[in-house]
Image 1 (spheres, one colour):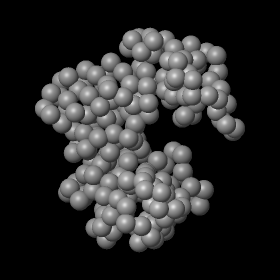
Image 2 (cartoon, helix red, strand yellow; image 1 turned 45 degrees about the vertical axis):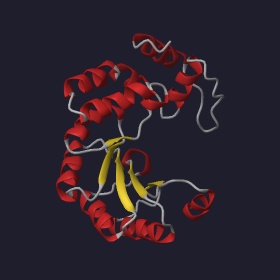
Image 3 (cartoon, rainbow, N blue to C red; image 1 turned 45 degrees about the horizontal axis):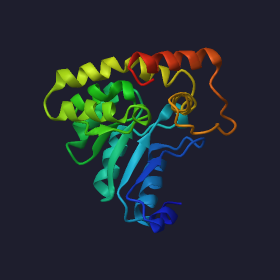
Image 4 (cartoon, rainbow, N blue to C red; image 1 turned 180 degrees about the horizontal axis):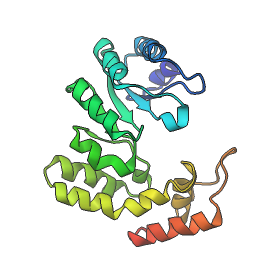
Length: 205
């Protein structure tokens, strides 16, 4: 699949860990190495154990970055700040770290992260951009203010499994992005009101 999308002209790959199989660390190393050898595109690994049942440990991530020239980053969505801290220490600049959780943008930037791959950005792209850029340009207080202002909305966007709430939010905002496909179902009514209230709180509706 990576070879097919490279032929279509994409700029890079976000490659999630294999799910269900629960690969060992050696298995993860072999898997990502094979993908790396198959394409010339830059690769960002996607570590999201809550969805895949599989966790890329810092040692494995750094080993891959050292051994595979086109593995350049990791989307860290483990939620484990201690793990991210260890990753930052071991990687020493050879692997770009992106927050995979919108409620951890500032903490991960403070550990040397370079940005976020975001759900919030679907409904608040400018504000998500500003959290990162204000921080990187030195106005950390402003960055934190924005992060905290949008925290309730971030929580609302995860009141059901992603992408149910964010698609619901976009429909509420008038983007008419359509219905979900099974097994995902539409937002429950109480959650819809929660999302709507959170959007209104920050002036998005």
